[in-house]
Length: 136
Image (cartoon, rainbow, N blue to C red; front, side, top):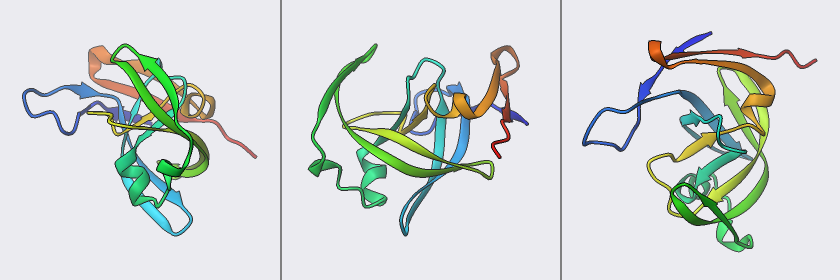
């Protein structure tokens, strides 16, 4: 499937195109739909505390760990087995709930989406190809 790069949400000063996919996250009866950045440099899935709150995840009761990125240091809380649906492909994520992230509220990385799909970035065309693997 070919997916066009989309403008990043929450950036009003200029248009920044990025590889985004629609995603629905489920925690029991709680559900949240948004867009996830496909990031080949990310080790795993990340969601914001705002999304965690909507999903009724008590992230503030989970012990915090420290991490770092090019943007600096951050605190995160690990949460396992969050159900995700991307283009009708369901799978479970082990996510890091990161405090104070912006503008990316949801990121999929190497430990999750890249293990389930072949992704070919074609930035010069502002698009990417995503081909999900068939798990029996």
